[in-house]
Image 1: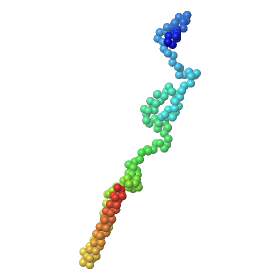
Image 2: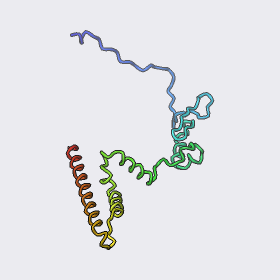
Image 3: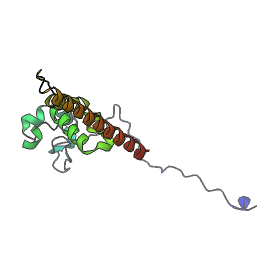
Length: 174
């Protein structure tokens, strides 16, 4: 019922003018003049060079800056410290990994596991130094046999200690 009581609003009519309408053929929208002293041109800071560049020239500036990778070097914008290569050389990488491995045995394991060949070479040198050689004389035969028997006992004892230590390491790591 309330809808019937309300009167429909009158439709808005366009304003009537007595002047005749002008029709322009081939109309082009006016463009703002770039050299106009009234309008201030906008500037942007280039992310590559850090220089202020007019907004209108930014696309061209970026194109040129990205085309020539040595442009930054030529223009002198690189700081003296940036010219050095920041990548580590192969020998530096291996030296740093070896240093890390020696300090973090929980990650890399023991020296024998990591540097097994180095340990074997040391053992061979030690064995050659402790080698018992008989000179062939009857007088030194018993002394040489006794020294050889003692060396075998020491080697077995060292092997037993190593095995016990490895077994203890396995038990504690579980």
